[in-house]
Amino acid sequence: MEQTYTKKEKVKQLSIILVPILVTQLGLFAMNFFDTIMSGQYSTEDLAGVAIGSSLWMPVFTGLSGILMSITPIVAQLVGAKKEKEVPQSVIQGIYVSIIMALIVVIAGYFALSPILNAMNIDAEVRRIAYQYLIALSFGILPLFIYNVLRSFIDALGLTRISMFITLMSLPLNIIFNYVLIFGKLGLPALGGVGAGVASAITYWLIAAISIFIIHRNRPFKLYQLFSRIYGVSFSKWKEILVIGIPIGFSIFFETSIFSAVTLFMSSYSTEVVAAHQAAINFSSFLYMIPLSIAMALTIVVGFEVGAGRMKDAKLYSWMGVGVAVTISAVLGLIVLFFREPVASIYVKDKQVIALTAQFLFFAVLFQLSDAVQASVQGVLRGYKDVNITLIMTMISYWVIGLPGGYLMANYTDLAYFGYWLGLIAGLTAGAVTLTVRLLILQKRRSSQVSKV
Image 1 (cartoon, rainbow, N blue to C red):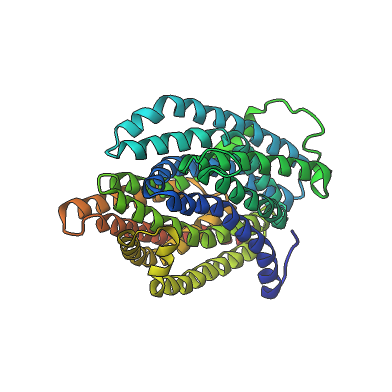
Image 2 (cartoon, rainbow, N blue to C red; image 1 turned 120 degrees about the vertical axis):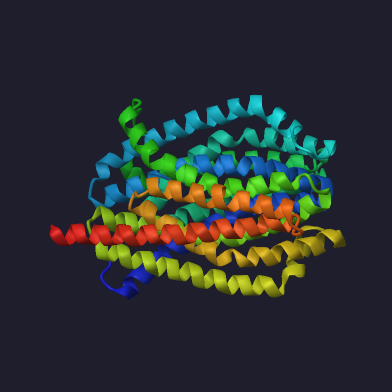
């Protein structure tokens, strides 16, 4: 990361950081994407089972990973303030926190998974697939969380292409593992959707191992000597990580869990509806990787500028990134609008499910702009380490406005399951508006503080 002086230099630096993050996010998402479409090619029941399993897992994973994302602004601000010697301690303590979190998830899942699935109104076969898919996936939780910490460290230094390299190495292997384990190749039994869980767990161990190797052996990472000594537990560092990370994690959890909650509500409908809904959500999530990547890049560059006390530069980066996110999402939304059925046919062969998926995708297009705004603005706010008010705003937007509104429209109007999607649109729009207002207030306050100094 270097200080920039002109808009052209800022665009170049943001692009250098953003593009590898985008490729990395698309690569990581592609693992879930191929889990879904390859399971759907095996059977509709396997698609529905993986859909239910993913809906339970994703809010837990994204929420807890959000806590670990606090490493990015912490390291970015330390580097911006020329305090590089403090970086190793922060990263290692982040790894300790990730290990504790992984153990808690596994233990909680052991006791809670069966009761949750048994309480759902789904076919017995779909329930079995969802349960076994999650059990298989659980064997990769520990390395996945450790990787998230290491990736946050790598990205905070502005070297996002390294994360991209790691993901691009692992993605083809994940697809091969999926093919072998889902369809039963090379003499192995056909596991269906459960095989996708096994494949993902194996891949998570690989990306963690590759990350450790690169950080230990290659510049500039090895200059920080992360693994050259054993660090004792520092509860003060844990507090710093958690004070910043918990609001980030819960903000992400509130957003992702509303999608998962809608999918669980959808389980009361037919297997075809569940499969179509999941296919549409999966593709929408694929498009969401663009504003999410922009948000992650903004956290890095804004955090770097804030750490150095350059508030005007931080503000310029902020709105530059939000504008890019909105523009790209608008263009992609129009493309999806006109190619909904071809997109739906990627996931399933059943014509009824394809038609339903195309209808759901229409609603997905409607919330693309709101999603782009709220995601990118959250990324900026994290760069400022402003996370507590964001937590409250996202909770109200998604869980007080979005989900209850969707439930009422789905159950007390003729919209049926489409009502849940209108609720999603309402929640995301509320989040976009309130977060933008918060950013404007924060930037005005920071600017006045600097001018007084």
